[in-house]
Length: 256
Image 1: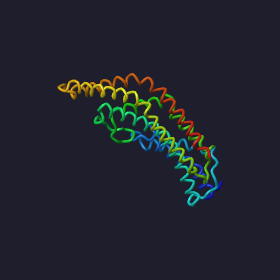
Image 2: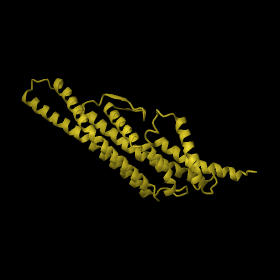
Image 3: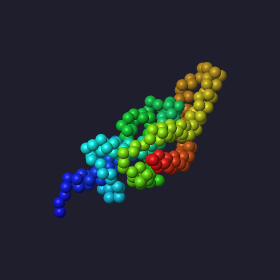
Image 4: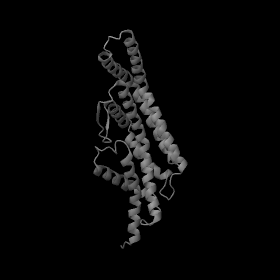
């Protein structure tokens, strides 16, 4: 049996396009894209998934080292990054809600290193991020994400067609709506702490000799943690709804 260079390049291309799309998603997606996950593990997982799905994905007859090959590579990177960032927006909205709560409670100075992104975040935001990650894994969100990416080759096949500009604009609006939805998580605590601050202001006017800083700061933190504890049972169904809506939008966003 003899193999020509065209056959070898065709085999490489059939594996390369799924591998690039999976790698781009693992780079941008939450959990998989965390800095605590070794790069080698992500590369090996992308290779295994690409090997499994490559026989079922029709690869176009395009020369790799050509303009069309570069456009195909760009399409795979864009599709994977879009899927990863769409889900990343949910976790970013949760972190934003936690940082808003921390700032309102007066704990904005209490920060720690986020192991997923490698940046300084408030401890309260890190707490909400851990909660969102656990809920995401509990509902098999990581498996659904891989399934959606594998199914994206059907709705967005490997071709020179790239997502239109209006579809990208819809994705930007969706991410903006997710950050607006983060108010749903932070609103109970922020409103409760605001009422405490208003009450402390009234007490300060009635009794100026009272050391409001010695009383107000621990009281604000106590009320904030109490409201967080009460609102935690509501967090799970809210995040479940966010994940389901996000998966549905990820499916619709890749439909050409």
